[in-house]
Amino acid sequence: MISGHETIFDTAERHALSILSFEHFLHLDVELSVQRYVLEQKPWLMGFLARVYYSHIVLGVIFIVYCYTFLQRDKYQAIRRTLAFENVIAFTILTLWRCMPPRLLPEEYGFIDVLHSNTGGSAWTQNKFQLTIAAMPSLHFGNSMFIALCLLKFSPHWYLRAVAPIWPMLMALTIVATANHFILDAVVGACVTLTAFRYNTVMLYLLPVERV
Image (cartoon, rainbow, N blue to C red; front, top):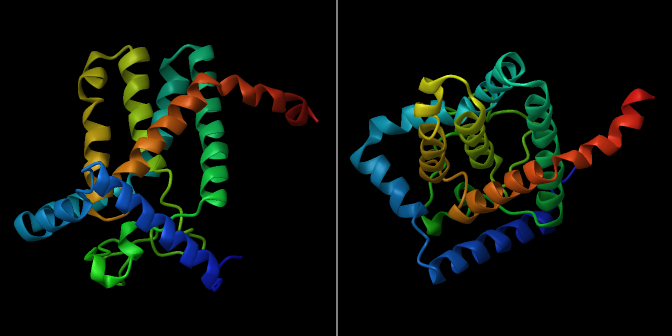
C-alpha cells in the first residue's frame, strides 16, 4: 500500500539519518566500520551471518515448540502472549515512525546490501510482502535476546542455558554487519520485548474476542 509513495520513503530516510546523527553524537555509529571489516577482512563470515539472519523465524518456531513441551503452562502462555504483544508494539512504532535500514541509504553513506540482491537474497528477503522501511525497532535482536533470557531463566536443560547468550550476540553482529539495522534499532527492540513481557497480560483482554 505504501509502495511508490515517495514522501513516506523520504521521511523514512530522514529518520534513518537522524538515528545515524544521534549515534555519531553518542559515538555509537559503528555500523559502517563493522560491515567494512567483515567484507574486507572476514568475507567468509558474511555467508554465515546471512544464515543467522534467515534462521530468525525458524528458530523462533522451534523455541515456541520447546517452551510448549518443556516449560510450565503459565510460563509458556506468558511467553506466547509476549511474542504477540511485542509485535503489536513494534508494528505501532514502525507505522508511526517509519525508518529506513542502513542498506537503503544513498550510496554516499557507504552501506552495502548483501542480503537483498539478486544473487545474495532468499525467499526471506525477496518477496513482495516485505516491509523494507521497518528498521526501528529490531525484533531480530529483541527476539534473540528474549529467547536467550527465557532459556536462562526457565529452561530445565543446562546445556541450553550455557549456549543461550551466544544467539543474541550473533544476531547483534548479523544485523549490523548486513546493514539491516542500526545499533539503536537493537536497543529499542530489546526495550519493546522487555516491555511486552512485563505487560503481556494485556493480551488477556482479547480472550472474550477469541471465545466469540
